[in-house]
Every structure is written in structure tokens, then in C-alpha cells.
Length: 397
Image 1 (tube, rainbow, N blue to C red):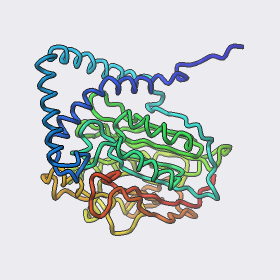
Image 2 (cartoon, one colour; image 1 turned 135 degrees about the horizontal axis):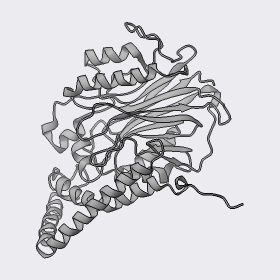
Image 3 (cartoon, one colour; image 1 turned 180 degrees about the vertical axis):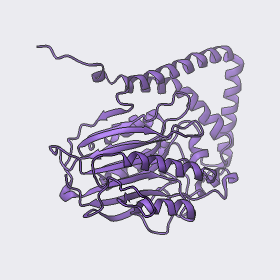
Image 4 (cartoon, one colour; image 1 turned 60 degrees about the vertical axis):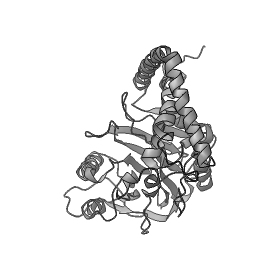
């Protein structure tokens, strides 16, 4: 009997996203040179500049002259091409979301699903500033992700986490690059979460070695800056043949900025409201770049009511210092923190009892994988965030 293929077998969502990215690559490249390179500091010791100030000035003059010549000699054709490519990119991006199954793009790695060893799971959380074009300068003060990718992959493979939660993986080409490097070692990849044709997706990418019981996506009701903020629910199994999950992982990136405190607290409330409706009682982690200051008493206290944090050292997991070297106007913004936190079953001051298990579950070793050095060297930083890695024990089906 001939085998019947479904549309899902052709990964139409992924193919459309890749076509969209290819058609928009010229815009990303142009903005990277004109909107980023031209206004970055000329200092050769910063970013991906030339080796000397004179050489860097020469590069920038060539960029300007090339742009002017292109407009003079081929302006009409460039304009028409830009319209066609822009429209085509948006059409294929829309089709990518249309062909998604359960509002996600799931990519299967070549590695077999791995059982958790003695009920232990290692979780990694990292905001890697995976922007296209020149946005890596203004958003994080780091070089383009293509230059940072080897260091990111090296850190992941050295740690060998069971579950990885990445934030700000906005560039489709970065999604594919991460998949290409990690698919021999991991079983499941979830990306393109949060449909947003005209703006940015959630930027969350979840990668796992272990067997998956369930994965689903939830949009926040409020967002900002054309970013579709959301949270993802991942339920993992202790072994591939287990019939029930052993843990629940909620992953997110909350809205950034000091003026977004009320919005962040509302987003946390939405996560808690969704969690309260779950039926299975499981150890539950909140994992993500929450953009909550350690010295923000109200937000920190609110989080502490519902979650026990794994990383307790005083060093922040994020610094604005790299971005300040690109544009000092950003100086004075907050240093936010990333979290891997265990949910509490009966939070103080809340009448609800959440379907989470604390007894027998322990947050073990928690440490940072450094994204930048103490000198805030922008040229060598893998991100303006350190990664947080935490051991979780006591996981049984």
C-alpha cells in the first residue's frame, strides 16, 4: 500500500518562513549597514568595526557612496524590487502562520528522545539578542548574531542542558542556524511562536532532549512595540515510554522598560490564571527573561509570593553597559534579571491552590554562563545577558 503524505510532512510553515526571510534579507542587510553601521561608534575596539579609525571611516564612505550611486543609477528598479520583495515577504510570512499546526512550528531533531537521569533535569535560559539588520546594536549593544553564534552553540553543547529556553530569536535565519547546529543533539525544537505579520513574534525558542507530553502557546492580551508577547507551556516526560508528564515549564519574556511595570505584573497574572486552570499537579517552573529589577520592591515581592528563585547571587544577569557604549543616551536604564523559578502550591495572600508539586522537588546547582566579560567588550560578547543554568531534581512520572 502506498504511504499517504499529509501537508505537515512537507513542513509548509517552515518553508514559508524561510522564503519570507530570504525575500526580506536585502532590507535587513541594508538597514544593518545604513541604520546600524553608519551610526555606531567609530572606535575600532568596539563592535564589528574595521581595525582602525581611518579604515572604518573609509568603509562608511564607501557605504554612503554605494547607496547614493544605487539610487542615482537604479533608483526606479530598486524601488520596484523593494515593493515586490516586501509584499512577497509578508505574503509568505502570513502563509507560514496559516500552515502552522497548533500555532507553532515544531522541528524534529535527529537525536532520539532521552530519559531524565535519576529524575534530574538541567534547564538553561538565555536571551541571545537574535535580531536581524542593525537592531543588534540598539537593542543589545552587541555584534550581529552570525558572529556570536559559534560562542552560543559552544556554551550550549558544553552545558548539555535537557531543556533550553531562548529569548529574542527574532531572525528566521537564526532559527535555522540554531537548528542546523543543535539538531544532532536535541530531539525537539519549537519556534515562530506568536503570529505577527507586521511586527515581531514572541522571539521564544524552546529546545528539548527529553520526550514531550504536551506543548502549547498562549498570547498575552496586552503587548507593546509591535512585539507579540506570549508564554509557552511545555510538559516533559521522565522517559520516552512514560504515559504521564513529570514537570511543567512555563517560558516567556515579559515586556521590558521601567514604564512597563504594571504591564509585566498583568502578564504574570495571566500566566498564573492559566496555571490555576490546569488539571495535572506537576512541578512547575517559570523560565524566562522577566525584565524585573532586583531593587524593584513591588515587582520582586509579587514574584516572590508565587515563585522560589533558583539563582540567588547578587550579580545581575543583564547589563546595559554594552548598549551604553553604542549610544550613551541609554545610560541609566535598569539592569534586569532572568529567572528559573519553582512555582508555589499555596502562595501567601492568595486563596487559590495551584496544581503544582513542591514536595520532593529541589532547585539544585544554579550558575551563570557569561555572555560578556567584566570589561564589557562588545566585540567578544555573545549577548548582553548571561545564561542561567539550573538543576532540578525529584522529577518522577
